[in-house]
Every structure is written in C-alpha cells, then in structure tokens.
Amino acid sequence: MLNDRSSALSLLETRRSGRPRDMVEPGPDEAQLREIVRIAARTPDHGKLAPWRFVHVPRHARRALADLLHRVYRLDNPQPARLEIEAVDRLAHQAPTLVVALSSPLPDTRIPVWEQELSCGAACMNLLLAAHAMGFTAGWITGWAAYSEEVRRAFARDGERIAGFLYIGTPRHPLEERPRPSLDLVLSDWAAPADT
Image (cartoon, rainbow, N blue to C red; front, side, top):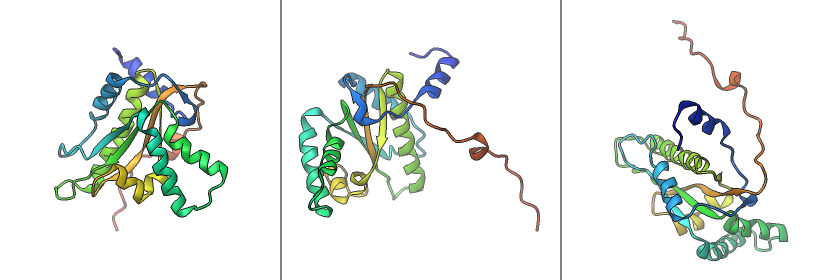
C-alpha cells in the first residue's frame, strides 16, 4: 500500500501500457480483480450515476469469445488470411485476465452524456492504475471488435457501448517507455480574449 506522496507520484510516473500479447501469468486472482474494479469505481462521477460497468471474461469462456469474434470478423472478411485469423484469435486468448469496459450513460438525467462518457474513461484509467499498483501490467485496446454491433450485443445492453478491452497480466519483457508529448504542446496559459 502506498503510504507517502512520493510513492503515489512514482506509481503514476511509472505506469506503462503493456501489450496484451506479451502478458503472461500470473494475472490477478478473483479477490485481486474485485479489488481492482472496486478501485476503478472511485472515479469522478457527476450525479453518482456509475455510467459504466465491467464484464470479466473468465478463462473458461475465452474459446466461446474466440468463436464469436471469428464469426463476426468473417461477416466482412469471408476469406481471412492466416495472419488475420491469428490476430482475431489473439484478441480472445491473450493475457491472463480480460475485462470488457462498457460505457453505460443514462440519457434521461440532467448530467450530459459526454460527462458520463468521460467518467467511463476515468474508470478505465483507474483500473489500469490499480492493476499497476498491485504489480501487474495492463493494456486498454479497442480495434474493430469494440466497434462491431454484433460484438457489442454480446456484452452490452441497449444504449451501452464497448469502451475497450482491458487486459491484465505480468509482462513477459520489461515495458518500454514510449515518447510522451512535450509539455509545451499540452500545457498553455489562458489569455483573456481582447475586447472587440
């Protein structure tokens, strides 16, 4: 457990996205996964709506997920090449733990849907941070499956969308740092507009 400011900052500064295909055992056990999701739920949530939810795809259900993904992929790609087939299969089987994040906005509230969608993204980020704090690596991907109506229906209720596939495990190789944007590109001071 982090007990001082420098540890918290170090946690944030050292988080890296892991490639799901490079994740190996161990992944979180059931109690750890529940704790990760509990922490993910501690996110900004205007109106206390919880406009998101998470669906765990256990190991014993991965074959069924692979079958679904292959069937759906072939609707638009009737004769996929070997590498395409392997990539689709990998979506279902990579990493020890797979959680599907769903954006579940409630449109009939005073809270704008956009704010609810931002809350979903924040919950996903919290999940990645919680996994990192427990010593795992995590990766958030979307791709064609996240935008497929057929895949969406397999996970989501009416009005929900797939926000991403969140993979959790142990990195097979040390994680590489990727280039980060220059602060000059992402931070500026506001200047009041000149009166016209």
